[in-house]
Length: 453
Ligand code: OOG
Ligand code: NI
Image (cartoon, rainbow, N blue to C red; front, side, top):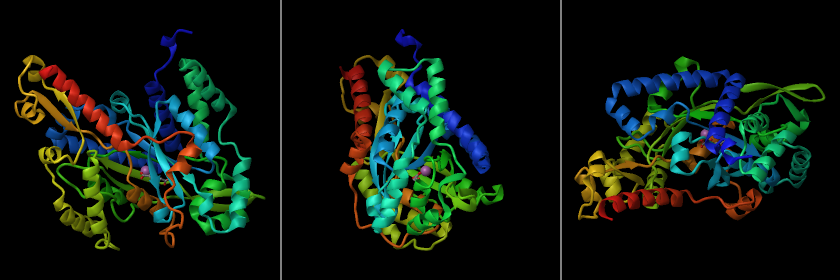
């Protein structure tokens, strides 16, 4: 078959993301309400801030905004994770970053499957935060073995899904019909099932150890637990959530509001209590699925990230039990030490940028100077911050905890174990900082080559 009959991985990812969003909207109607709220706030923000609208349009960020989502799933075994890696690869989504959440009392480690190159990100940056349960962190040997035995019995993929992945690997692509089959079959893995695979007593024993363990172990598959739209004004969304019938978590995670947004700010509405049917016809409930919103800012360099982490650490002791308004005031005070001017952020090497020629730059031909800042000053080159495409472990822990019924009583003894995660995955995870640095480098060299030779 000629390769041209294949859909691109971008096409498949876009269709899959749309199908997943439709499924979740049918499963959790409040997600639909959240989408409407975010769309309204985004529209109003763009109307009242034409400069922002213009900037987003110029950077090609406006088209992806309405479609942009991230989701999250949690799996139980290395086998499941390894097949997921191949499943996401069909859609051009690759494992980026290693997140250890055990320090925050959540017995998982994770990666984010996401597109990595400029064009794919611009088209649709769909990402799935994927956690792997760490049974080895459960203290009780009996419970550990019981959980492992239950997980060993399940298969979270349909036969059609496995066949589609293999076909993709053998052919190097999927045609229209094959892609549609892949999407329909792959979607089944993420569907909600109200029938548990265990009896109520087993569920309760696992739940007592950690609610998350019950959520992973007692179901047929790793149901999508939230899908997150991207907003341009998260403070406004947080404020309007109650009137729209949603119960927001207490505080917005991440950095405070700034003129130049950095990294990622997130908030969520609390998980819903849902009816469940356990083996032996017993009825019960489970809370797993919630809604979340995010506002994305610029990607920080290692230096910028260090500064962020240290300021966040400083804020930690001063924000205990504060409401959101007070929490944000303290953060704003502490983050006064983080430059909030694009030029300064660039010159001090705190954030990553993408460079391209302006119209004048295109027309300029060769110039003598090769100094990038000078070329920017002369209006020949445009620098735009690279959007942060990843996650934040402290924020993620906050999101987990607000939906798992408060904090776990401490941290887990086992610490980060990236090697074990990569072994389970069957591949290394990409270093997110290296990816941003490479995108920045390529854009810088392309611009300099055009102007200076
Ligand atoms: C994942 C929580 C992390 C985020 O946006 O940081 C996350 C989960 O609850 O499974 O989605
Ligand atoms: Ni999330």
